[in-house]
Image 1 (cartoon, rainbow, N blue to C red):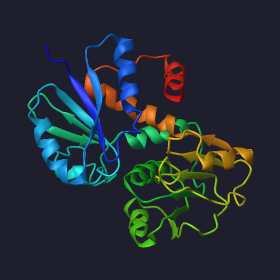
Image 2: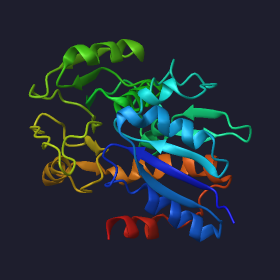
Image 3: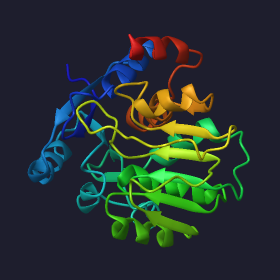
Image 4: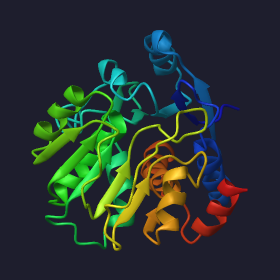
Length: 270
């Protein structure tokens, strides 16, 4: 008997915790299904999409580094993700075999901040890749400003501010931080196997929030530095679980079970 399945694709992919999350929810709901990892190199992306498109059991995939921009070439875009966020993290197979791309990162990122009033608040974002696009899209909706982007290549990041209608500036990674209400690391710096993200957090006010999208390790050097200063922090699991919940319903037709988040966090941090 065939079983519906979804996947997460990336290069590298061994670090992904998405299979743990989705399979935990499938089991909790008693749904027949599976969620897997697929290591897809950039040169193999087109062939992967073509092969899966032909598989009626494949429900879609989550998309991680480095494919969030490239995947837009191979799927339909009815919600104009290309024209708004400009990066896709989820591909969903329709019953007729067509593939629709969307982005659950922006909503997943913003969920832990939804209770805060960030209107007009100064924000710092590290990075200018696919995750940064989702972050900036959500922050623009929240009416923040000004935004300072720290990036290795300032030129690449300049266009992002204009794309999302944000005021601010782009500076090098080693530039001093402005006094911001929110600092977000949307880069892979600080991730296992990547260079560390060494920032001097002393310019941040005492009520600033430091949010790191990296979740392997869960307590990054950045979050440890923020905690040692007594700052509030948000770790990468919040966004990971938030974006996964939206994707899960798209893949398997039901929302994740309620009231199981603590159990899931324990599983992910074991």
